[in-house]
Amino acid sequence: MASLNKLMKQAMRAQQQAEQVQAEMSERTVEATSGGGAVKVVARCDGTVQSIKVDPEALSPDDAEMLEDMLLTAINSAISQGQQVQQAEMAKITSGMGLPGMGM
Image (tube, rainbow, N blue to C red; front, top):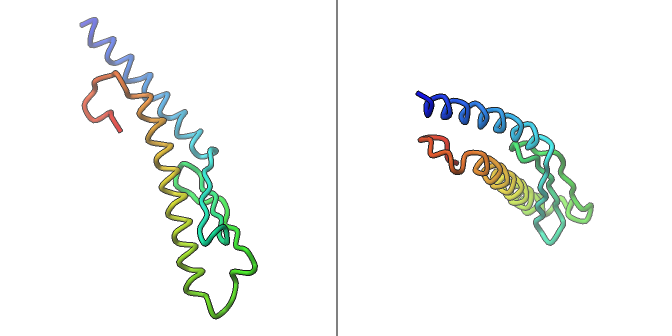
């Protein structure tokens, strides 16, 4: 029974740490660029986009499709980077616990 109590305490501690990491991820940011820096996207590690900057020289009406592609590339890259950071932080919490379904 002592091992069950220990396991429950570890699970509760991991849950509290996970909640703290989730809160931190809403503040932590990553940055991605595309088009040689013509587009810059800053995303939070919780999967939300914080800002998008476009170099005015990239705003040619003739190149709207290229700008759309650059935006899409930078946004997807920033979100992916943020997810990787979040997964790494969550893995730190659950490593060594040996609980099924707790690993990231």
